[in-house]
Amino acid sequence: VHSADKILELLNIGNSRRKTESTEANATSSRSHAVLEITVRRKQKGKYGSQVLRGKLALVDLAGSERATETNNFGQKLRDGANINRSLLALANCINALGKQNKKGLAYVPYRNSKLTRILKDGLSGNSRTVMIATISPADDQYHHTTNTLKYADRAKEIKTHVHKNIGTIDNHVEDYQ
Figure 1 (tube, rainbow, N blue to C red):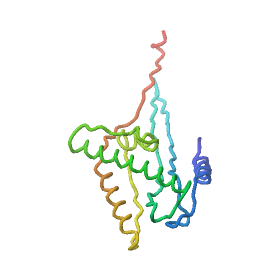
Figure 2: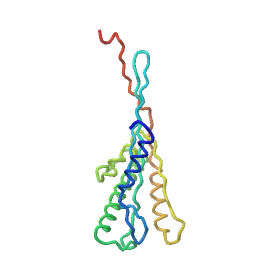
Figure 3: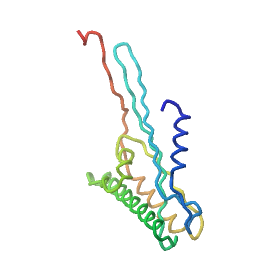
Figure 4: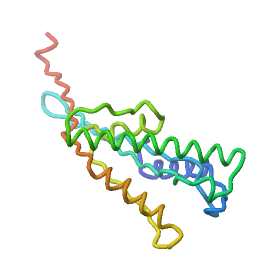
């Protein structure tokens, strides 16, 4: 795409296709994760060559984990919840491994355990700046969910990435073609 309006249009299309259903935990519970990846390229032309600057922005909305006993789901809703929990567990394992890697040195990071972790690999350990926004509730009945979310965010805070500019140089001076 070549405009911000087109990106917003695609975001709205994606949100309209996102699966949501009511459960006993939420009236509109998201039954899937949402990922929007935007790759930006900018070409700067100089006298003898050009530079291409690249960047990628990934916006991710994770579906919340749910305990089957709280939602009283069965059938497809129960399977959806189990799949959500499985991918969140795989993400937690990656976050834990990356946190250990920063403290103790190299550690195996299981990115291949889930589609979600494969998509988020660059943001978790690559040349990137990553921000996590955790949504919590002050309600008494949500105490365990809030505590788990804060622990999850605290582990994610331990990940350290090293950022450098993504610049590719394309030299095309006339002398090179003789």
